[in-house]
Length: 226
Ligand code: AP5
Image (cartoon, rainbow, N blue to C red; front, side, top):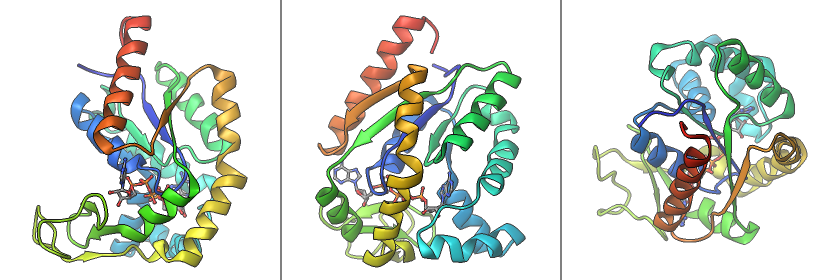
């Protein structure tokens, strides 16, 4: 089953966008495109972009739109995106959303289906405190809700589990503020476009996945070809 338009995962930091975007991308056999992962990869490789964005990520602010759009446009031009893709953490500003619409229009694709995860603030704070990430492969765990089989060790590749530097409480506060100021206006933007669907992201992961799949299937039924 292919997607003829991108899916966009939208929601505050720690809402579960990455967790769900990976599952849905796997289900539809399309690439999972996380701008956060792309930026962290650029930092790890020490590229020019990586050096420019490192202090921005460390502060919890958003990276400028032109840097993000150049990265996304290059990634979207690769052949593996021809059957669709799942965006995670992108778009994050109205100008990014408008730029994505323009790219999709140019390459003859439909507007994205936007899947919003709603999670209360206290749950976000608990999730961020419990999140651990594999230092080798990036696999994500949670010491409360999705722990590894062996403490601090990745089940998949044996890598050491670490806390992301921007998960520190003070930086997380900044990320929440950036979300409220710069990203939340996208909700109204996408609602006006008629492409926004909202899901309760506070329930167990499997239930969130089930709700998302049923939305994608409903939209598919409505349009006949999603
Ligand atoms: P990014 O990496 O995108 O971070 P984020 O949006 O803040 O999202 P997170 O990765 O923190 O959370 P998530 O929603 O993916 O949750 P997860 O599934 O891990 O961005 C990082 C930085 O890069 C930004 O601050 C910015 O500087 C920059 N950036 C990135 N994109 C940009 C853009 N487009 N424009 C400008 N700047 C950009 O889940 C969290 C935890 O909860 C995990 O431990 C997980 O196991 C657990 N969990 C998930 N779901 C559930 C559930 N249902 N029940 C219980 N636990 C759960």
